[in-house]
Length: 158
Image (cartoon, rainbow, N blue to C red):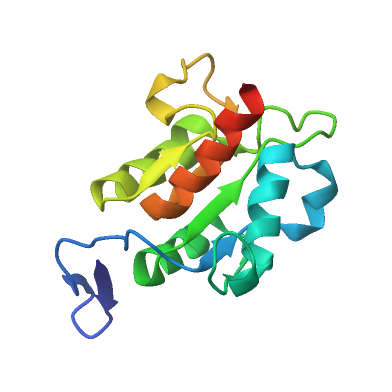
């Protein structure tokens, strides 16, 4: 992690070897789009919202800045999961974030720091590149949270 020092006009290393915590209790997703989510994501968020009495048996907080960079920065600092899913809206099935120059560079940072990144159905690297502005659903963050959501996606396919 780097920080800009305006006195010397340079970026300085603040922390080396950043690691995303394996487990966390925060999620970042746009709740205003909830009615357009698929069954797996709906179930995952319901489990989080149920808190200690739900199947995840822990209290969750939702954080949503509406900026992938800001939301993923929080995941680097505190752990958690960032979700920008495919939506059942016109044009929403492909996701919103651009694969090559939005999602993919952040995926590299997240996975290098020990986190996971997926579309929900498959790892980014298994998605064929078809166009420069191709969109992709995004799920990334702490391994435990991403794994849980991926399992829910797998259950909906069987």
